[in-house]
Image (cartoon, rainbow, N blue to C red; front, side):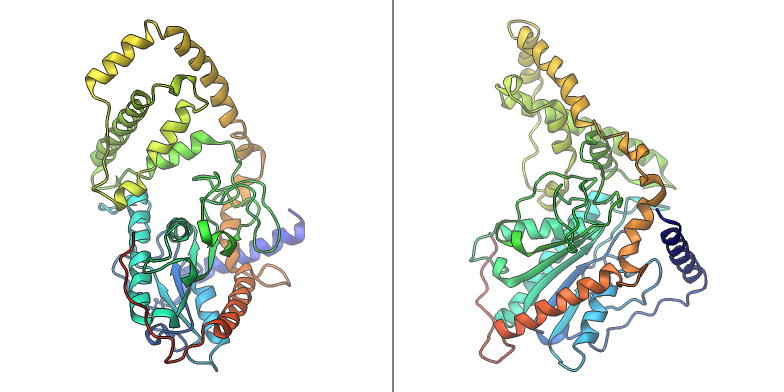
Length: 412
């Protein structure tokens, strides 16, 4: 980092610290240019980052922006202000969800529970607005950090829905994912740059279906949330395990109980998969692949009635007998390949130490919202992009009485 850039970064962080110490108490109130109640042309549904939302938050509640809170307000409010002379153009709603890491004095939702609630609440808000406004209103999905994961999951579901769903891909004008921990490797940032890493929760390709061309990513180089080294499977796994555990200061025993349940569940589901797939030992799928997949329980939290199969003692006994008997040569070959595969899947792990992540990752994750140069902040550019989208939407779907609400159809 150049000396000039270092000074700019130091100045921005110092300003943030001063604001944190001396800022007045937050005042919650709706914004005067927010037309969310009036079926605007474009409705922004925004999911804030960790610790920046509550489950009981009023979706129209406008918390005062500070150095540490309501960062997505750096996009929603300026977008509304751009159209202050065109009432009814822009509205926005904040997704009320816990946005926690599971760490607190008393028990709070785990990371994965929080994310699942955010996804469910976002779908609820979208459905309510579609039933209220019909074709008069189109949506922009906006998510930052943990909220980026929330909206990434929402986008994947909507993009692969059928056209008869209440909210379908045609209802979504665009999706903005800022510092997304599920950013697939190779996804360009909005400015044309392509940070070489990917999300530290997952950097695998994602299927956004009909929303593929509507996804806009904002990812700063060295922001470990979205630009982590690609081959760090152990870190992905560790984050998924920690994301299911309550870290309650007043009840430390709960942490150990959760950890035992999480690890037992992963082992049980992994064995079930191997038992169910008799050709697994001759496949290219690794044990680490299965464990990583089974460690993410967000979708199961969303659907608690989904089956959670485990291998029975009899199945495990039969597998053990085969693996130590006639199948022993196949098992030995598979285990030998597992060692090489494990090293390959974690080949970039030490890049976390060799590259400047330790020094700049946090700063890069918050500098989307600050102007550290003459060209404006990332948020400023995304507001301009959103304004262009809103103007094009007004030409495409005018806010007129003829654009009446559509019939309600149950989501698949």
